[in-house]
Amino acid sequence: MKVLTANRLTDGIAVWYADGGWADTVDHADIAHDKAAEDRLEATGAAAHASNEVVDVNLIDVSVVNGVVEPVRLREKIRAAGPTIRHDLGKQAARAA
Image (cartoon, rainbow, N blue to C red; front, top):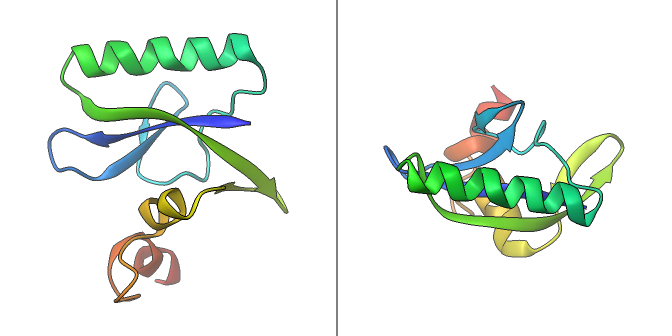
């Protein structure tokens, strides 16, 4: 399973493609279950990059644990959560609030 991620060009925030737009969290990202879906997501990312919406567009591996989308690689887990040195900042702080 893969999802499309990038960094929003206006503020550099990590975003994930979900429901026809870019979401600030990975929770509801559109999941590609096969090669055709991956190709569609890649085309979407290329178009968003070309229109200067996002940069660093990538498909990343995810798993679904108890109904929650979770990145597989540590780098992507950090991008999804926020800074590792201060848990009161970033997306993990917003989830706790």
